[in-house]
Structure formats: C-alpha cells, structure tokens
Length: 286
Image (cartoon, rainbow, N blue to C red; front, side, top):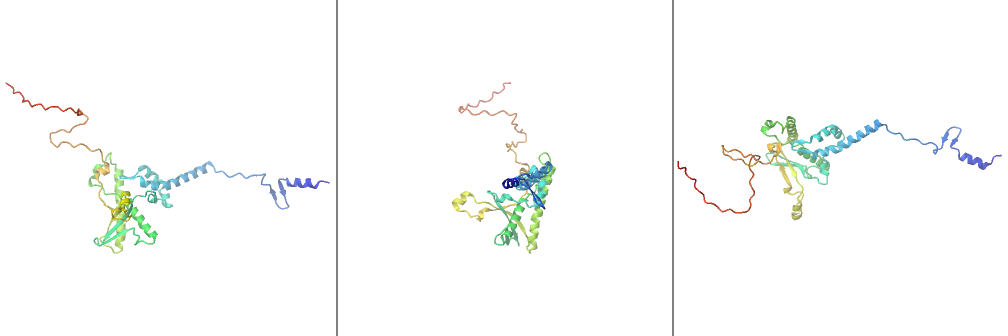
C-alpha cells in the first residue's frame, strides 16, 4: 500500500493540473515573450516623434529668427514642412509672450468720427469675459507680427547682388499681407457704424527698473505706451548700413584721396619746433 504522504508530495510538485474540462499549466513553467517592433516600425515611430517635436519648437523659434529681411531661410524651410501639422493641432502660438522675459506687448488704437472716438484693443473694460479679452489681445499681436514697412520708390533699381528678385518679391508680399489684415480690421469697425476709421499699432513697454524703483512707475503709466508709426523702410535699413565713409572734398578739380595709395601721417613726437621766417623766393636774373 502506498504511503499517503508521498502521494500528496508528488501531486503538489506536478507542473500540470488536469481536470475533466480544462488543463492548467503552472505559471512558473512557461513565460510569454514581449512583442518587439520591427526595424521599419521603429523608424516610422522615430520620424513621427521628431516631426512632432519640430512642430512644437519651430513656431516659437520663428519669432526669434525674424529680421528686417523676413524669416530666416533655414527656419522658414523647416517650418514649411511642419506648418500644416502645427496649424492642425493649434501649436503655432506666440509662446514668447509667456516666457520669463516676455518683452513688450502690442495693442491697437482705433480712431473714428474724425478723431472724436478712440478705442483701444484689448481693453478689460470692454472685452469681458476674459476669453474675449484674450482674443482681442491675440489679434493685436497678430497685426504687429505681420507688419512689414512699405518699400521705397526706387527699390526696383536695387536688384542685384545685395537684393535678389526673390527677396524683393517676399518683401512686397509681406507688405500686401499686412495691408490686407489691417484693412479687414478697418472694415469690421466700419460695419459697426464707424466712419473715418484708422488704426495705429501701440507698443506697451515694460517699466524701466530705475523708474520703477525711484518713481514707482505703474504698468499703466502713459509713458509706457509708444505709438509705432507706419513709415517706409529706408535704403540703409533695407540693404544694411555699411561703414561710414570719410567726407570727400567738394572741389570739381580735386581728386578723392585713396587710402591705399596715400602716405601715412607720422605720429607727433611732442617736440615743439620754432617757427622759421619765410624766405622770399629768389628772382631769376635772366
């Protein structure tokens, strides 16, 4: 007769338990291997992650990479690839305003009725709730960001090595875009019964540290608001200011001095020479 204790130990150590309906395996015997991605799948996931990071980083970078001649070509090329994604997911926002050093903000001052009516956008007293104020604030920043000064009349004569036709077309397109945006805002105010409407861009600067400490300058002080005029860009600003040249003589028969062929002026030694009396030139006896 078999020992009952030995029979119980053998049952406890069996890896498989059987019943009349199902068969159960011990979890310690078999292990499920995790599913790994193929090389192609990992490549596609990496491309999606890099593309999403570019869609997040490039829009705020475009604010810092914009100069007098427009957007940086390298940033503009990358931004053109991810711009549809940024706009689809609403990622092309002005993050620079919410940075630790936001810089000045911009407003719109609209005058109408011959200058008798003056409105400012945004305005906490007129735009409420806060979301309506924020929308007007973004419109004002959008107008200022799209600003492109008018070009000088003789800009077509400057096409050459310093100003390519592509750059000139970009500047003209930027000016037309700004005029369309400003014109649409003027038409909106005119649709509300306003006449003789004109809008100006206003910059609200941060208070200077010295004025803030010495005078307790408020954030809403009138000196912090500066009107930004719409004036045509100058030739110097368009092409870049070069080194200032020395003034040339005005005489018609005088030759301008060539610095490369001219003799350098000796440095003073500090010794003071005595003046010699002038000697009259000897007359020719012949």
